[in-house]
Amino acid sequence: MRYLCTFIILTFNLSVCAALTPPLENAALQNSSYSFYAKYVDGDDIISVNPALRLTPASTVKLFTTAAALSLLGPETTFKTRLYYDGKKNIFGTLRGNIYIAGGGDPALGSSRIKNNPDMDAVLSAWADSVKNAGIKKISGAVYADNSYFEGLATPRKFAWEDIGNYYGARADTLNFNDNSFKIYFKPSTAPDMAADIARTVPEVQGLTIKNHILSSSDSADNAYIFGAPGKMEIEIYGTIPAVNYEFSINAALPNPPLFAAQSLVQTLGTRGIKTEEGAKVSDVNIDYSGKTRLYEITSPSVLEIINVINKKSFNLYAEVMLKQLAAAFGRRADTESGVDVIMKFLEAHYIDTNDTVLYDGSGLSRSNITNAKTIVSLLEIMTKEKNFDLFYNSLLIPEDGDRKYFARVFARSSALKTARIKTGTNANARAYAGYAKDKQGRMIAFCFIVNNYTVATPAISAIFDKLVIQMSNLEYAGTASKKFK
Image (cartoon, rainbow, N blue to C red; front, top):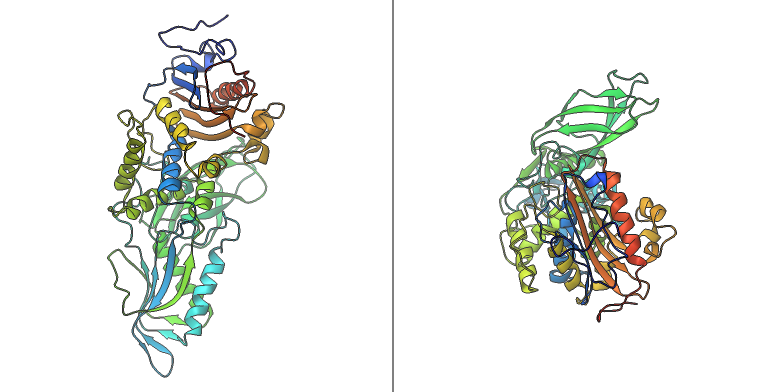
């Protein structure tokens, strides 16, 4: 055998030791930090390589957030966004007052990511129609975006500067809209190292200034990064995009999503002939709605639908909003730090040691997050005992369903295609897989693999993980009792 089972860094169940051996001498792992841990649910360890080593887990942090949300909030929970007005209308239909968009922490308001969820245009049309149907022909005040339900920083404090201007680093507000992002379309030059001009943005973001430093490149990858501070209406774009003969787009984070929502409603009302004299404004202080008239209410997708997007698409915004919803649901200050505390108490309530886990967000985008493979596997194991386990299990990537074509390809001739459920994680020099596999007898395995500080291309690390998942699905069980899942 090329690798020996030792009590120092490798401990295997003897019945499966020969079948599962991480390739620790692989050049991709040299001088990196790594942890491999897998065990049968309620049974034996299969592989244990540095299981307690603290590492950056990247987006596998989302497992903490989604497990807690599914267990504590419940799969059917929804969130409300309401439209109000105050003041009085005169006989000419002029409202001597304001319109209010009262955010309720719906992460998917106006998003097309979830089936049957009204998109941005549909939401704006419904709001504008409700104003018109109320007999309002003119608004002497403003359209206010009420962003007060959540507190603290909209962007987690440990997010990297190179991330927060891009769609995947978008801020998490009480009033989110259109996934808090917009597209920037370029006219690339077909010659490398030439300037790529901006053609347009979709949707248009009023008041935004863009400083463009993008060049066309012979590289086929998108290497453009957007830099801008949350709330500031000026962004700069650096890097390269492919030198192609068609418009090329990148996704940017909205600098101020609540303001954008209010501005968009003002604009849509204008197309209905309803002028708003004081334009769009944002309120971050609590507004009393007891004396105001409700015009319209939108119900968010369910927690389960949101979790499916978080885990299958690894969508950071939804995870960060869900973290704050966890805090709010337990009467805590509705901010990132309180949400993290709720997660820690959830883990402790299930007798999971939290001494090796430090979280600064709910998505894993921060490079400062740390945990270890054993903690994540413990979470996965306790979730198998939850009444909503099937929902959690199937919220992860399902290779057979084509949730990610990569896995459908690499697992094509393996039983892992049908039985593996995976959450991936990637950020700067960190790669992780965590989830479930089933052996040939259908016995459930929980696993987590993390590698940090590697210098090879990430696919080289993924290939190591993929092989281990396939090997687990091919195991012939010969150990002590473990749980069998249908």
